[in-house]
Image (cartoon, rainbow, N blue to C red):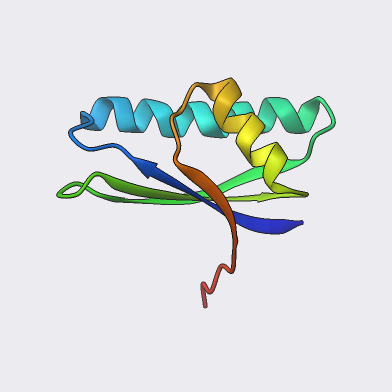
Length: 87
């Protein structure tokens, strides 16, 4: 599995909606995995001032990550391969 970064522009999103989107991403990843498409939500970083939000997922390919976000109804700008450099 590869790590993918989802870039989002969520300027002025209320924190309650941001938290709901995160829960929905986690729930949708679990549903897709149970259906036979392994995908894992890793974490997100949000910058309130700019609205920039970056979310990491682990999946076989970018198409699974796009499908998760479309299915969950979470807007995104792009999906790119990334390296998770957590120590």
